Length: 144
Image 1 (cartoon, rainbow, N blue to C red):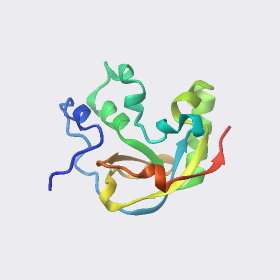
Image 2 (spheres, rainbow, N blue to C red):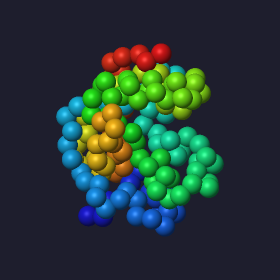
Image 3 (cartoon, one colour):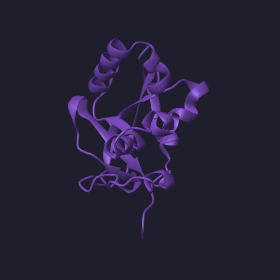
């Protein structure tokens, strides 16, 4: 069966392979993600690209591809530390882009493809349709 990504039409516009060939499906029992309060919950699992596509018009496909995936962390400390770094660098403007809480949940192997774990335990996940993260994630800590 041919799998399609959430927002497949945007992936089709890229010239580079997205996600990269080395991304793999894997079950991860606990992951962390920055999320919004209830009044903005529709943005909790919306890729950065879709929040502001104009921001990526002059970006290379590699950057656009990363922005089309969802950012997760494999540990809460990494999620907190990276958020605080960005808050110091960019100020309160990141709140409307990234959220104000940390939520915890899990990823199934059938959900999509995951990149490698990087700095702070961050990785990018490219989700297949349909995604059910809203039901799987719970807010566990306020960042602000």
